[in-house]
Amino acid sequence: MNASDTPLVVVGAGIMGAGIAQVAAQAGHPVHLHDVRPGAAAEACTRLRGTLEGLVAKGKLTSDVAAATLARITPIDQLQQAAGARIAIEAIVEDLATKRALFRDLEALLADDAILATNTSSISVTAIANGLKHPGRLVGMHFFNPVPLMKLVEVISGLHTDASVAEAVFDLAAAWGKVPVHARSTPGFIVNRIARPFYAEALALLHERAATPQQIDACLRAAGFRMGPCELMDLIGHDTNFAVTNSVYAAQFFDKRYMPSGVQRELVEGGLLGRKTGRGFYRYPEGPPALPVAVHEAPLTAREVVVHGRGAIADAIEAATTRALAAQGWGPARVADSGWTGLEVDHARLVLTDGRCAQDLAQAGGVAELVVFDRPLVWPAPGATSALAVAAAPGTSAAWREQAGRWLHALGFAPVPIADVPGLVVARTVAMLIDEAADAVLQGVCSEPGADAAMKLGVNYPAGPFEWLLAWSPAGVHGVLQALDAHHRGERYRTSAYLRRLMR
Ligand code: NAD
Image 1: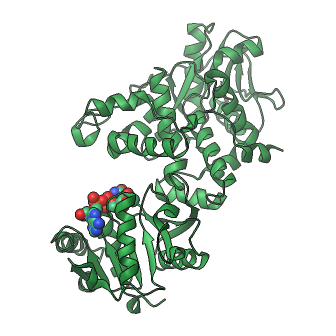
Image 2 (image 1 turned 45 degrees about the vertical axis):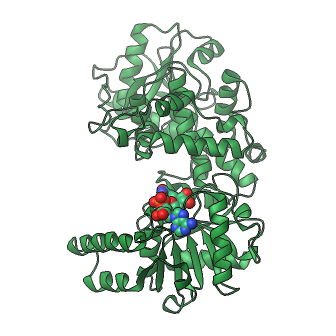
Protein backbone atom coordinates (compact mmCIF):
# COMPACT_ATOMS: atom_id res chain seq x y z
CA MET A 1 0.00 0.00 0.00
CA ASN A 2 1.57 3.29 -1.10
CA ALA A 3 0.94 5.88 1.63
CA SER A 4 0.61 8.88 -0.67
CA ASP A 5 -2.07 7.04 -2.69
CA THR A 6 -3.97 5.91 0.36
CA PRO A 7 -6.06 8.74 1.78
CA LEU A 8 -7.17 8.28 5.34
CA VAL A 9 -9.74 9.86 7.61
CA VAL A 10 -9.30 10.13 11.37
CA VAL A 11 -12.53 10.77 13.23
CA GLY A 12 -12.25 12.40 16.65
CA ALA A 13 -9.68 15.15 17.04
CA GLY A 14 -8.95 14.67 20.73
CA ILE A 15 -5.75 13.41 22.34
CA MET A 16 -5.66 10.14 20.42
CA GLY A 17 -7.12 11.28 17.08
CA ALA A 18 -4.64 14.14 16.77
CA GLY A 19 -1.75 11.78 17.51
CA ILE A 20 -2.97 9.20 14.99
CA ALA A 21 -3.39 11.91 12.32
CA GLN A 22 0.17 13.08 12.99
CA VAL A 23 1.67 9.60 12.68
CA ALA A 24 -0.31 8.80 9.51
CA ALA A 25 0.67 12.11 7.91
CA GLN A 26 4.32 11.61 8.87
CA ALA A 27 4.14 8.25 7.09
CA GLY A 28 2.97 10.05 3.93
CA HIS A 29 -0.82 9.60 3.93
CA PRO A 30 -3.13 12.43 2.96
CA VAL A 31 -5.27 12.74 6.11
CA HIS A 32 -8.67 14.28 6.77
CA LEU A 33 -9.23 15.00 10.45
CA HIS A 34 -12.85 15.31 11.54
CA ASP A 35 -14.53 16.07 14.84
CA VAL A 36 -18.21 16.47 15.66
CA ARG A 37 -17.47 19.70 17.52
CA PRO A 38 -17.13 22.45 14.89
CA GLY A 39 -13.63 23.91 14.86
CA ALA A 40 -12.13 21.10 16.99
CA ALA A 41 -10.21 19.54 14.09
CA ALA A 42 -8.71 22.90 13.13
CA GLU A 43 -7.74 23.52 16.76
CA ALA A 44 -6.04 20.12 16.86
CA CYS A 45 -4.04 21.11 13.76
CA THR A 46 -2.98 24.35 15.43
CA ARG A 47 -1.80 22.39 18.49
CA LEU A 48 0.00 19.94 16.23
CA ARG A 49 1.76 22.83 14.48
CA GLY A 50 3.06 23.96 17.89
CA THR A 51 4.24 20.41 18.73
CA LEU A 52 6.03 19.98 15.41
CA GLU A 53 7.65 23.43 15.67
CA GLY A 54 8.89 22.44 19.12
CA LEU A 55 10.43 19.27 17.66
CA VAL A 56 12.09 21.31 14.90
CA ALA A 57 13.50 23.73 17.51
CA LYS A 58 14.96 20.78 19.42
CA GLY A 59 16.51 19.39 16.24
CA LYS A 60 14.38 16.25 16.35
CA LEU A 61 12.61 16.97 13.05
CA THR A 62 13.59 18.96 9.99
CA SER A 63 11.41 21.93 9.11
CA ASP A 64 10.69 20.30 5.73
CA VAL A 65 9.28 17.17 7.35
CA ALA A 66 7.23 19.24 9.79
CA ALA A 67 5.81 21.39 6.97
CA ALA A 68 5.05 18.34 4.79
CA THR A 69 3.33 16.59 7.70
CA LEU A 70 1.11 19.59 8.41
CA ALA A 71 0.35 20.06 4.72
CA ARG A 72 -0.98 16.50 4.51
CA ILE A 73 -3.59 17.03 7.24
CA THR A 74 -6.86 18.72 6.32
CA PRO A 75 -9.26 19.54 9.17
CA ILE A 76 -12.89 19.07 8.15
CA ASP A 77 -16.15 19.83 9.91
CA GLN A 78 -18.29 17.74 7.53
CA LEU A 79 -17.55 14.02 7.43
CA GLN A 80 -18.78 13.93 3.79
CA GLN A 81 -15.59 15.78 2.78
CA ALA A 82 -13.66 12.55 3.48
CA ALA A 83 -15.57 10.48 0.90
CA GLY A 84 -12.41 9.33 -0.93
CA ALA A 85 -10.73 7.83 2.14
CA ARG A 86 -9.51 4.23 1.84
CA ILE A 87 -9.03 3.81 5.59
CA ALA A 88 -11.02 5.34 8.47
CA ILE A 89 -9.67 5.34 12.01
CA GLU A 90 -12.12 6.24 14.74
CA ALA A 91 -10.97 7.87 18.00
CA ILE A 92 -14.21 9.38 19.31
CA VAL A 93 -15.97 9.12 22.65
CA GLU A 94 -15.85 5.66 24.29
CA ASP A 95 -19.51 4.78 23.78
CA LEU A 96 -20.82 1.77 21.85
CA ALA A 97 -23.95 3.40 20.39
CA THR A 98 -22.03 6.49 19.22
CA LYS A 99 -19.30 4.38 17.64
CA ARG A 100 -21.82 2.11 15.88
CA ALA A 101 -23.66 5.14 14.48
CA LEU A 102 -20.41 6.63 13.21
CA PHE A 103 -19.38 3.41 11.44
CA ARG A 104 -22.79 3.16 9.81
CA ASP A 105 -22.25 6.70 8.46
CA LEU A 106 -18.73 5.81 7.33
CA GLU A 107 -19.97 2.66 5.62
CA ALA A 108 -22.50 4.71 3.67
CA LEU A 109 -19.84 7.25 2.72
CA LEU A 110 -16.76 5.19 1.85
CA ALA A 111 -16.06 2.55 -0.82
CA ASP A 112 -17.17 -1.01 -0.02
CA ASP A 113 -13.60 -2.20 0.45
CA ALA A 114 -12.43 0.70 2.62
CA ILE A 115 -11.01 -0.43 5.95
CA LEU A 116 -12.76 0.69 9.13
CA ALA A 117 -10.65 0.76 12.30
CA THR A 118 -11.59 1.61 15.86
CA ASN A 119 -9.20 2.85 18.55
CA THR A 120 -11.54 1.75 21.33
CA SER A 121 -9.74 0.79 24.52
CA SER A 122 -12.49 -1.24 26.13
CA ILE A 123 -15.47 -1.89 23.86
CA SER A 124 -15.85 -5.21 22.04
CA VAL A 125 -14.80 -4.92 18.40
CA THR A 126 -17.32 -7.67 17.64
CA ALA A 127 -20.08 -5.55 19.15
CA ILE A 128 -19.07 -2.40 17.25
CA ALA A 129 -19.18 -4.34 13.95
CA ASN A 130 -22.65 -5.74 14.64
CA GLY A 131 -25.17 -4.13 12.29
CA LEU A 132 -22.69 -3.09 9.59
CA LYS A 133 -23.36 -4.18 6.02
CA HIS A 134 -19.77 -5.47 5.73
CA PRO A 135 -18.74 -6.18 9.32
CA GLY A 136 -15.66 -8.11 8.12
CA ARG A 137 -13.82 -4.88 7.36
CA LEU A 138 -14.01 -3.53 10.89
CA VAL A 139 -10.92 -4.09 13.01
CA GLY A 140 -9.48 -2.69 16.22
CA MET A 141 -6.36 -0.53 15.91
CA HIS A 142 -5.50 0.26 19.50
CA PHE A 143 -2.82 2.92 19.87
CA PHE A 144 -1.23 3.98 23.13
CA ASN A 145 -0.90 7.48 24.51
CA PRO A 146 1.10 9.50 23.43
CA VAL A 147 0.59 8.03 19.96
CA PRO A 148 3.72 9.47 18.29
CA LEU A 149 5.96 8.04 21.03
CA MET A 150 4.38 4.71 21.95
CA LYS A 151 5.44 1.91 19.62
CA LEU A 152 2.72 -0.62 20.35
CA VAL A 153 -0.45 -1.06 18.29
CA GLU A 154 -2.83 -3.86 19.27
CA VAL A 155 -4.55 -5.09 16.10
CA ILE A 156 -7.81 -6.49 17.37
CA SER A 157 -9.94 -9.00 15.53
CA GLY A 158 -13.56 -9.49 16.49
CA LEU A 159 -15.60 -12.49 15.41
CA HIS A 160 -16.59 -10.71 12.18
CA THR A 161 -13.16 -9.35 11.26
CA ASP A 162 -11.68 -10.72 8.01
CA ALA A 163 -8.14 -12.05 8.52
CA SER A 164 -7.02 -10.07 5.44
CA VAL A 165 -8.24 -6.83 7.03
CA ALA A 166 -6.37 -7.56 10.27
CA GLU A 167 -3.25 -8.32 8.22
CA ALA A 168 -3.60 -5.12 6.20
CA VAL A 169 -3.85 -3.03 9.39
CA PHE A 170 -0.96 -4.97 10.93
CA ASP A 171 1.20 -4.10 7.89
CA LEU A 172 -0.01 -0.51 7.96
CA ALA A 173 1.04 -0.08 11.61
CA ALA A 174 4.43 -1.64 10.84
CA ALA A 175 4.88 0.74 7.89
CA TRP A 176 4.26 3.62 10.29
CA GLY A 177 7.17 2.46 12.42
CA LYS A 178 4.97 0.88 15.07
CA VAL A 179 5.17 -2.63 16.52
CA PRO A 180 1.81 -4.27 15.83
CA VAL A 181 0.61 -7.27 17.83
CA HIS A 182 -2.44 -9.35 16.94
CA ALA A 183 -5.10 -9.69 19.64
CA ARG A 184 -8.54 -11.18 19.90
CA SER A 185 -11.37 -8.93 21.00
CA THR A 186 -11.70 -9.79 24.68
CA PRO A 187 -12.04 -7.48 27.71
CA GLY A 188 -8.97 -5.25 28.09
CA PHE A 189 -7.37 -6.80 24.98
CA ILE A 190 -3.75 -7.60 25.87
CA VAL A 191 -2.17 -4.75 27.80
CA ASN A 192 -5.11 -3.50 29.84
CA ARG A 193 -5.91 -7.05 30.84
CA ILE A 194 -2.47 -8.44 31.69
CA ALA A 195 -1.58 -5.23 33.58
CA ARG A 196 -4.51 -5.54 36.03
CA PRO A 197 -2.51 -7.43 38.72
CA PHE A 198 0.21 -4.76 38.71
CA TYR A 199 -2.34 -2.43 40.30
CA ALA A 200 -4.50 -5.07 42.02
CA GLU A 201 -1.69 -6.69 44.03
CA ALA A 202 -0.47 -3.30 45.26
CA LEU A 203 -4.02 -2.42 46.29
CA ALA A 204 -4.38 -5.81 48.01
CA LEU A 205 -1.16 -5.20 50.00
CA LEU A 206 -2.46 -1.77 51.01
CA HIS A 207 -5.86 -3.23 51.86
CA GLU A 208 -4.18 -5.64 54.29
CA ARG A 209 -1.93 -2.88 55.64
CA ALA A 210 1.01 -5.11 54.73
CA ALA A 211 3.12 -2.34 53.21
CA THR A 212 3.01 1.38 52.47
CA PRO A 213 2.72 2.88 48.96
CA GLN A 214 6.34 4.05 49.25
CA GLN A 215 7.55 0.56 50.12
CA ILE A 216 5.60 -1.08 47.29
CA ASP A 217 6.79 1.50 44.76
CA ALA A 218 10.42 1.24 45.90
CA CYS A 219 10.43 -2.56 45.58
CA LEU A 220 8.86 -2.64 42.12
CA ARG A 221 11.09 0.15 40.85
CA ALA A 222 14.08 -1.82 42.07
CA ALA A 223 12.73 -4.78 40.09
CA GLY A 224 13.08 -2.68 36.93
CA PHE A 225 9.64 -1.09 36.52
CA ARG A 226 9.88 2.57 35.57
CA MET A 227 7.26 3.51 38.12
CA GLY A 228 5.75 1.70 41.05
CA PRO A 229 2.03 0.89 40.89
CA CYS A 230 0.99 3.53 43.42
CA GLU A 231 2.77 6.42 41.73
CA LEU A 232 1.54 5.11 38.37
CA MET A 233 -2.09 5.01 39.52
CA ASP A 234 -1.60 8.57 40.81
CA LEU A 235 -0.35 9.53 37.33
CA ILE A 236 -3.08 7.75 35.35
CA GLY A 237 -5.75 9.13 37.70
CA HIS A 238 -7.61 6.89 40.14
CA ASP A 239 -10.93 7.64 38.42
CA THR A 240 -9.61 6.36 35.08
CA ASN A 241 -7.78 3.37 36.55
CA PHE A 242 -10.79 2.40 38.69
CA ALA A 243 -13.10 2.70 35.65
CA VAL A 244 -10.89 0.39 33.55
CA THR A 245 -10.74 -2.15 36.40
CA ASN A 246 -14.52 -2.01 36.80
CA SER A 247 -15.09 -2.42 33.08
CA VAL A 248 -12.78 -5.46 32.83
CA TYR A 249 -14.39 -6.91 36.02
CA ALA A 250 -17.93 -6.53 34.64
CA ALA A 251 -16.90 -7.78 31.19
CA GLN A 252 -15.40 -10.90 32.83
CA PHE A 253 -18.74 -11.62 34.53
CA PHE A 254 -17.45 -10.49 37.92
CA ASP A 255 -14.63 -13.00 38.09
CA LYS A 256 -12.95 -12.41 41.47
CA ARG A 257 -9.60 -12.33 39.76
CA TYR A 258 -10.39 -8.84 38.45
CA MET A 259 -12.20 -7.49 41.50
CA PRO A 260 -11.73 -3.74 42.07
CA SER A 261 -10.40 -2.51 45.42
CA GLY A 262 -12.15 -0.59 48.17
CA VAL A 263 -8.87 1.25 48.74
CA GLN A 264 -9.10 2.81 45.30
CA ARG A 265 -12.83 3.40 45.50
CA GLU A 266 -12.33 5.49 48.62
CA LEU A 267 -9.70 7.62 46.85
CA VAL A 268 -12.10 8.15 43.94
CA GLU A 269 -15.03 8.98 46.19
CA GLY A 270 -12.85 11.42 48.12
CA GLY A 271 -11.73 13.20 44.94
CA LEU A 272 -8.13 12.14 45.65
CA LEU A 273 -7.55 11.27 42.01
CA GLY A 274 -3.77 11.60 41.96
CA ARG A 275 -1.56 14.17 40.29
CA LYS A 276 -4.42 15.96 38.58
CA THR A 277 -6.10 16.85 41.90
CA GLY A 278 -2.87 17.37 43.85
CA ARG A 279 -3.32 14.29 46.01
CA GLY A 280 -3.71 10.55 45.62
CA PHE A 281 -1.44 8.14 47.46
CA TYR A 282 1.05 11.00 47.49
CA ARG A 283 0.81 14.78 47.53
CA TYR A 284 1.75 16.81 44.45
CA PRO A 285 3.75 18.57 43.16
CA GLU A 286 6.08 17.07 45.78
CA GLY A 287 5.41 13.46 44.67
CA PRO A 288 6.53 10.35 46.55
CA PRO A 289 8.86 11.10 49.46
CA ALA A 290 12.08 9.06 49.49
CA LEU A 291 11.82 5.79 51.35
CA PRO A 292 13.93 5.82 54.51
CA VAL A 293 16.38 2.93 54.19
CA ALA A 294 18.02 1.24 57.16
CA VAL A 295 21.81 1.18 56.89
CA HIS A 296 23.47 -2.19 57.57
CA GLU A 297 27.15 -1.57 57.24
CA ALA A 298 28.50 -3.25 60.37
CA PRO A 299 30.94 -6.09 59.58
CA LEU A 300 29.52 -9.56 58.97
CA THR A 301 30.18 -12.06 61.70
CA ALA A 302 29.63 -15.79 61.30
CA ARG A 303 31.22 -19.14 62.07
CA GLU A 304 29.52 -21.01 59.23
CA VAL A 305 27.79 -19.80 56.05
CA VAL A 306 25.99 -22.13 53.64
CA VAL A 307 24.42 -21.11 50.34
CA HIS A 308 21.38 -23.27 49.60
CA GLY A 309 19.64 -24.02 46.32
CA ARG A 310 20.41 -24.20 42.64
CA GLY A 311 19.84 -21.87 39.72
CA ALA A 312 20.77 -18.30 38.88
CA ILE A 313 19.68 -16.70 42.15
CA ALA A 314 21.55 -19.23 44.30
CA ASP A 315 24.62 -18.71 42.08
CA ALA A 316 24.39 -14.94 42.47
CA ILE A 317 24.05 -15.32 46.25
CA GLU A 318 27.11 -17.55 46.32
CA ALA A 319 29.15 -15.10 44.23
CA ALA A 320 28.17 -12.12 46.40
CA THR A 321 28.72 -14.05 49.66
CA THR A 322 32.12 -15.23 48.45
CA ARG A 323 33.06 -11.60 47.70
CA ALA A 324 31.81 -10.46 51.09
CA LEU A 325 33.76 -13.10 53.01
CA ALA A 326 36.96 -12.91 50.93
CA ALA A 327 38.39 -10.19 53.17
CA GLN A 328 38.12 -12.59 56.12
CA GLY A 329 39.94 -15.27 54.14
CA TRP A 330 37.15 -17.84 53.86
CA GLY A 331 34.03 -18.54 51.82
CA PRO A 332 30.58 -20.14 52.00
CA ALA A 333 29.71 -23.80 51.57
CA ARG A 334 27.07 -24.78 49.00
CA VAL A 335 24.23 -27.28 49.31
CA ALA A 336 22.27 -27.53 46.08
CA ASP A 337 19.45 -29.91 46.92
CA SER A 338 18.09 -28.67 50.24
CA GLY A 339 14.77 -27.63 48.69
CA TRP A 340 15.11 -23.93 49.42
CA THR A 341 17.21 -21.06 48.13
CA GLY A 342 19.07 -18.63 50.35
CA LEU A 343 21.68 -18.33 53.04
CA GLU A 344 22.12 -20.20 56.29
CA VAL A 345 24.32 -18.38 58.76
CA ASP A 346 25.07 -20.29 61.97
CA HIS A 347 21.74 -22.13 61.50
CA ALA A 348 19.65 -18.98 61.10
CA ARG A 349 18.01 -18.66 57.69
CA LEU A 350 17.61 -15.99 55.05
CA VAL A 351 15.23 -17.58 52.53
CA LEU A 352 14.14 -16.58 49.01
CA THR A 353 10.34 -16.51 48.94
CA ASP A 354 8.63 -19.52 47.39
CA GLY A 355 5.30 -17.90 48.18
CA ARG A 356 4.94 -19.11 51.73
CA CYS A 357 5.01 -16.69 54.66
CA ALA A 358 8.08 -16.61 56.89
CA GLN A 359 5.99 -18.15 59.66
CA ASP A 360 5.10 -21.17 57.48
CA LEU A 361 8.68 -21.54 56.23
CA ALA A 362 10.02 -21.48 59.80
CA GLN A 363 7.49 -24.08 60.88
CA ALA A 364 8.20 -26.31 57.87
CA GLY A 365 11.98 -26.01 58.37
CA GLY A 366 11.80 -26.50 62.13
CA VAL A 367 13.75 -23.29 62.76
CA ALA A 368 12.92 -20.19 64.76
CA GLU A 369 15.31 -17.69 63.20
CA LEU A 370 14.05 -17.04 59.69
CA VAL A 371 13.79 -14.00 57.43
CA VAL A 372 12.23 -14.38 53.99
CA PHE A 373 13.22 -12.09 51.11
CA ASP A 374 11.49 -11.14 47.88
CA ARG A 375 12.42 -12.40 44.44
CA PRO A 376 15.07 -10.18 42.81
CA LEU A 377 14.17 -9.80 39.13
CA VAL A 378 17.46 -8.10 38.42
CA TRP A 379 20.58 -8.74 40.44
CA PRO A 380 22.10 -5.40 41.52
CA ALA A 381 25.49 -4.47 40.11
CA PRO A 382 28.33 -4.75 42.68
CA GLY A 383 28.29 -1.67 44.91
CA ALA A 384 24.64 -0.85 44.21
CA THR A 385 21.82 -1.26 46.70
CA SER A 386 18.42 -2.18 45.51
CA ALA A 387 15.20 -2.18 47.59
CA LEU A 388 13.96 -5.68 48.41
CA ALA A 389 11.00 -6.62 50.63
CA VAL A 390 11.69 -8.83 53.64
CA ALA A 391 9.59 -10.32 56.43
CA ALA A 392 10.61 -12.14 59.59
CA ALA A 393 9.00 -15.21 61.17
CA PRO A 394 7.41 -14.30 64.51
CA GLY A 395 10.03 -16.19 66.57
CA THR A 396 12.97 -14.40 64.94
CA SER A 397 15.25 -12.58 67.38
CA ALA A 398 16.10 -8.92 66.97
CA ALA A 399 19.72 -10.02 66.53
CA TRP A 400 18.96 -12.18 63.45
CA ARG A 401 16.68 -9.55 61.96
CA GLU A 402 19.62 -7.14 62.18
CA GLN A 403 22.13 -9.73 60.92
CA ALA A 404 19.86 -10.71 58.02
CA GLY A 405 19.76 -7.05 57.02
CA ARG A 406 23.56 -6.94 56.99
CA TRP A 407 23.78 -10.05 54.83
CA LEU A 408 21.23 -8.69 52.38
CA HIS A 409 23.18 -5.46 52.26
CA ALA A 410 26.29 -7.46 51.42
CA LEU A 411 24.34 -9.10 48.59
CA GLY A 412 23.48 -5.66 47.20
CA PHE A 413 20.03 -5.09 48.69
CA ALA A 414 18.40 -2.52 50.92
CA PRO A 415 15.92 -4.57 52.96
CA VAL A 416 12.40 -3.13 53.16
CA PRO A 417 10.62 -4.80 56.10
CA ILE A 418 6.92 -5.42 55.42
CA ALA A 419 4.27 -7.64 57.03
CA ASP A 420 4.64 -11.42 56.72
CA VAL A 421 2.43 -11.97 53.65
CA PRO A 422 2.70 -14.63 50.92
CA GLY A 423 4.93 -13.70 47.99
CA LEU A 424 5.89 -10.33 49.52
CA VAL A 425 5.75 -7.62 46.81
CA VAL A 426 7.60 -8.53 43.61
CA ALA A 427 7.15 -12.32 43.58
CA ARG A 428 3.44 -11.90 44.17
CA THR A 429 2.96 -9.22 41.53
CA VAL A 430 5.05 -10.92 38.88
CA ALA A 431 3.49 -14.35 39.51
CA MET A 432 0.07 -12.81 38.95
CA LEU A 433 1.22 -10.96 35.80
CA ILE A 434 2.60 -14.23 34.41
CA ASP A 435 -0.59 -16.08 35.34
CA GLU A 436 -2.77 -13.48 33.66
CA ALA A 437 -0.62 -13.58 30.52
CA ALA A 438 -0.83 -17.38 30.55
CA ASP A 439 -4.62 -17.21 30.72
CA ALA A 440 -4.66 -14.69 27.85
CA VAL A 441 -2.61 -17.07 25.70
CA LEU A 442 -4.82 -20.00 26.76
CA GLN A 443 -7.87 -18.09 25.57
CA GLY A 444 -6.25 -17.20 22.25
CA VAL A 445 -6.12 -13.48 23.04
CA CYS A 446 -2.49 -13.29 21.94
CA SER A 447 0.66 -15.38 21.51
CA GLU A 448 3.48 -15.61 24.09
CA PRO A 449 5.76 -13.28 22.09
CA GLY A 450 2.74 -11.01 21.50
CA ALA A 451 2.15 -10.73 25.25
CA ASP A 452 5.84 -9.97 25.88
CA ALA A 453 6.02 -7.31 23.16
CA ALA A 454 2.73 -5.74 24.24
CA MET A 455 3.72 -5.40 27.91
CA LYS A 456 7.19 -4.04 27.12
CA LEU A 457 5.99 -1.54 24.53
CA GLY A 458 2.51 -0.69 25.77
CA VAL A 459 3.35 -0.14 29.46
CA ASN A 460 7.17 -0.15 29.43
CA TYR A 461 7.61 -3.28 31.53
CA PRO A 462 11.29 -4.17 31.91
CA ALA A 463 10.59 -7.66 30.51
CA GLY A 464 7.64 -9.60 29.19
CA PRO A 465 5.70 -12.07 31.37
CA PHE A 466 7.01 -15.08 29.43
CA GLU A 467 10.57 -13.77 29.70
CA TRP A 468 10.11 -13.67 33.49
CA LEU A 469 8.69 -17.16 33.36
CA LEU A 470 11.75 -18.40 31.46
CA ALA A 471 14.02 -17.10 34.22
CA TRP A 472 11.73 -18.59 36.89
CA SER A 473 9.68 -21.77 36.35
CA PRO A 474 6.01 -22.69 35.95
CA ALA A 475 6.26 -24.67 39.21
CA GLY A 476 7.82 -21.71 41.01
CA VAL A 477 5.06 -19.36 39.84
CA HIS A 478 2.44 -21.95 40.76
CA GLY A 479 3.98 -22.21 44.25
CA VAL A 480 3.52 -18.48 44.86
CA LEU A 481 -0.05 -18.57 43.54
CA GLN A 482 -0.86 -21.57 45.69
CA ALA A 483 0.46 -19.83 48.81
CA LEU A 484 -1.61 -16.75 47.97
CA ASP A 485 -4.64 -18.94 47.35
CA ALA A 486 -4.20 -20.75 50.66
CA HIS A 487 -3.90 -17.40 52.44
CA HIS A 488 -6.83 -15.63 50.77
CA ARG A 489 -9.11 -18.48 49.63
CA GLY A 490 -11.33 -18.00 46.62
CA GLU A 491 -10.88 -17.82 42.89
CA ARG A 492 -8.52 -14.91 42.66
CA TYR A 493 -5.22 -16.75 42.84
CA ARG A 494 -6.01 -19.80 40.74
CA THR A 495 -3.24 -21.07 38.50
CA SER A 496 -3.99 -20.82 34.78
CA ALA A 497 -4.55 -24.13 33.01
CA TYR A 498 -1.88 -22.96 30.56
CA LEU A 499 0.74 -22.80 33.35
CA ARG A 500 -0.37 -26.17 34.70
CA ARG A 501 0.16 -27.58 31.22
CA LEU A 502 3.66 -26.08 31.11
CA MET A 503 4.40 -27.67 34.50
CA ARG A 504 3.82 -31.10 33.02
P1 NAD B 1 -10.87 12.82 23.72
O1 NAD B 1 -12.00 13.15 24.60
O2 NAD B 1 -9.58 13.54 23.88
O3 NAD B 1 -11.33 13.02 22.20
C1 NAD B 1 -12.51 12.52 21.65
C2 NAD B 1 -12.94 13.45 20.55
O4 NAD B 1 -13.99 12.84 19.82
C3 NAD B 1 -13.49 14.79 21.06
O5 NAD B 1 -12.81 15.84 20.43
C4 NAD B 1 -14.98 14.76 20.68
O6 NAD B 1 -15.49 16.02 20.33
C5 NAD B 1 -14.96 13.84 19.49
N1 NAD B 1 -16.22 13.16 19.21
C6 NAD B 1 -17.10 12.64 20.08
N2 NAD B 1 -18.13 12.06 19.43
C7 NAD B 1 -17.89 12.21 18.09
C8 NAD B 1 -18.55 11.81 16.91
N3 NAD B 1 -19.71 11.15 16.96
N4 NAD B 1 -17.99 12.13 15.73
C9 NAD B 1 -16.83 12.81 15.67
N5 NAD B 1 -16.15 13.22 16.75
C10 NAD B 1 -16.66 12.91 17.95
O7 NAD B 1 -10.69 11.25 23.83
P2 NAD B 1 -9.37 10.36 23.55
O8 NAD B 1 -8.62 10.22 24.83
O9 NAD B 1 -8.69 10.89 22.34
O10 NAD B 1 -10.03 8.94 23.27
C11 NAD B 1 -10.65 8.64 22.04
C12 NAD B 1 -10.79 7.14 21.91
O11 NAD B 1 -9.52 6.51 22.03
C13 NAD B 1 -11.69 6.49 22.96
O12 NAD B 1 -12.36 5.41 22.36
C14 NAD B 1 -10.67 5.99 23.98
O13 NAD B 1 -11.17 4.91 24.75
C15 NAD B 1 -9.56 5.55 23.08
N6 NAD B 1 -8.22 5.52 23.70
C16 NAD B 1 -7.81 6.50 24.55
C17 NAD B 1 -6.53 6.44 25.11
C18 NAD B 1 -6.04 7.52 26.03
O14 NAD B 1 -5.04 7.30 26.74
N7 NAD B 1 -6.65 8.69 26.05
C19 NAD B 1 -5.68 5.38 24.77
C20 NAD B 1 -6.11 4.41 23.87
C21 NAD B 1 -7.39 4.48 23.34
